[in-house]
Length: 239
Image (cartoon, rainbow, N blue to C red; front, side, top):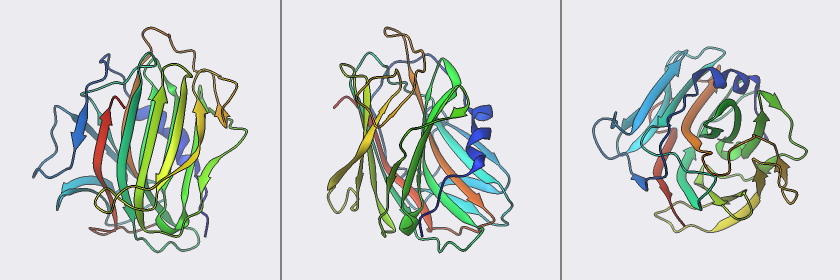
């Protein structure tokens, strides 16, 4: 079953924040007993929670509502539009979705200068991968970036080129431990480049524009227990 993105994404701009930092390489395996508050800022609403335990970042929902989500914002680093960078994370989702309910994990990349400009990627496990973009709060892509893959775990990679100003998205049906096997999903242009599957004009400064990053968990009327939805092996670095 292919699960589409939902209207909750429109509300996420209210919790996005911006801080002026340049790219600092980050490698996070979530092995510590608690989140590093100098690195991450945690936000949650409804019954959704992102919790670091058992060596992973777990998304949990104990008593589901119509909108349960949590975000973990990277405070320690902001990659720039003026530099090459790459982000990778492992994802797993074994939730058995039913009609009218869903749960996912993923990430948001947003314009640090305008929090209403953002791109999201959701991993629904066997429901596939879904991505889309907003420009000043308006959803608009001419083509969706999607993968229909009946797997409960894998990985996502984003590679940004300062020359082309393109984000290229890849998915792997295997995780870091198994060895990545990347499949190109599509491209996104935050400054309106012609050769892109999805493009916007976020009006970012070519010399000062920064991207913010959040890891996300989201649910609609879906209970999620420990171990069902996880994020692991987050990496942000120059390629």
